[in-house]
Length: 308
Image 1 (cartoon, rainbow, N blue to C red):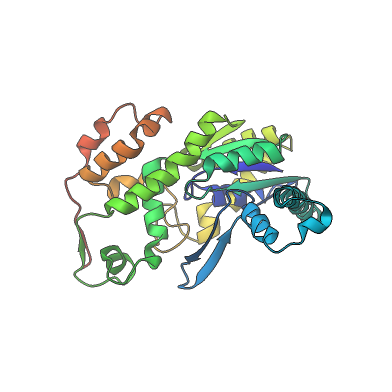
Image 2: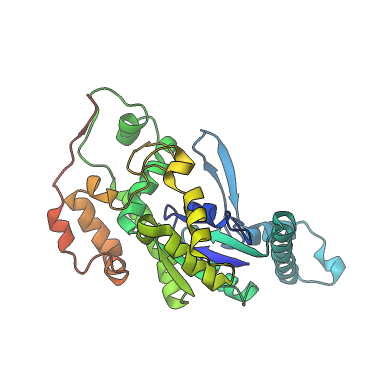
């Protein structure tokens, strides 16, 4: 099993969809590591449990009679998690009938370092692929993805979900929302800077030529990397094939909302740019999305998003 690690809203589902069209690759999301367990509201207005495999092992240990096996609680957790990882891998291979498994990983806040360390420990032979996207686009996409979870009094919800006539937004973000998505973007990148990946793929490069990026990935995974096959995989996962819409044709509440790069320019104010630079500016430059903080000067003081 190999791993694609990214922040949420960076194109990991898009990439996994393309990988699943390869005859030798099965891509999925296992959420093995991070020791995380919470109940979250989902976009259907319901609540769902988000739990990682290691958190499940720890929960099992509270009631399991591990002393009867001659184990301490920690020994039980370690062995249970190891066997669980082996089961997840063999289950995917057996039922997909494919030889290569790719787990897409978007770590929960505060868990990126632990996730990378556990992958390296439990799967020492695994290839690690980093998927990155401009953090400003990540923040915009994340804010849209959370729209339906916001309270009815939220100006963003009134504008984009309820479509209230006459509603007007002069700012898309609020400070807390932007700060949260800055953390979601920075943490996986920082963890992988300390444990370098085997390959880095950019969302923007996939927008330009996903087939070329797939060829690089197929070569790393030592599967058929024929360009024609990569083009078929890319076409099966294209924005039009998945959504029925053209790239740039927006549907605010869809998981695949717009399918382009650079949409952040339509949603950032100057104060947003300043806050982003304070929290994530060095990463924006280190990853090559900007060469300085001068991009802030081109941003408007306020937005004028109005529903007639």
